[in-house]
Length: 279
Image (cartoon, rainbow, N blue to C red; front, side, top):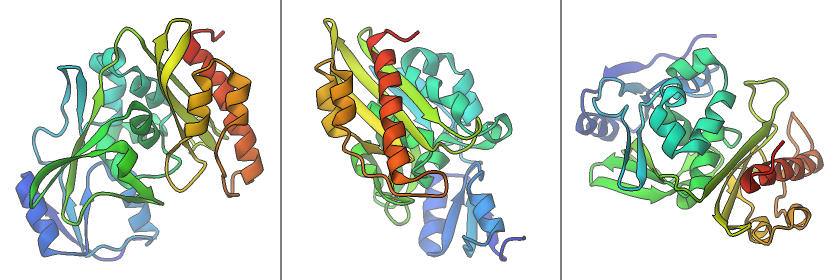
């Protein structure tokens, strides 16, 4: 199937992209296009205008500075996967990268596109949530930052305002006591996860503190299992599994009950990673 007709403009600056969005209400931004092009071809999306932002300089940066890691919206998944800065300062992102689709898609897909699309079964929104990161945007009123906990609002919906461009994400850099864990279950490697879990914590003596468990594939957005977070800090993994406050719906991959069971399986695996006892 071919997409419905649309106009095309290539923006050379953020201000130009914002102006184009303001001039055409029925417009979509084109970055990597790995999700957008598929929806166009299936006519699930039919914008009047595509605004290509790939010509905007400076949006593919990866910078670790002053205790934070800044990743530009046009950073390709493959670029992040190869980045020494991300491997060192954002290990959870590095853990997740090989699970994202397939190499051909990672070569074109972008960090910003994944976050903005907000697929509830995607890895990066959950990672951003687990890391307590922020989304950076630019619009007619200037730049702003939105906390990850406030950004993902509903199925494929975010707190991005009309006419705003997502320019990057910002996450705390890992420290000596940072602990991370990641696992997902999919029918085939590279498929969307049936259930996935991204997690961070801080080592505290023989236990954990500041646990953040971000699940994907179990709701309309990536979401935190807050009750289980609190229980896991006590070190009782089985009690944390019992405290999982998730209510997954049935979908084409599994029933809600199966997803809830698999969420517990992943929590046991990820808890071992956080506590340094895997293997």
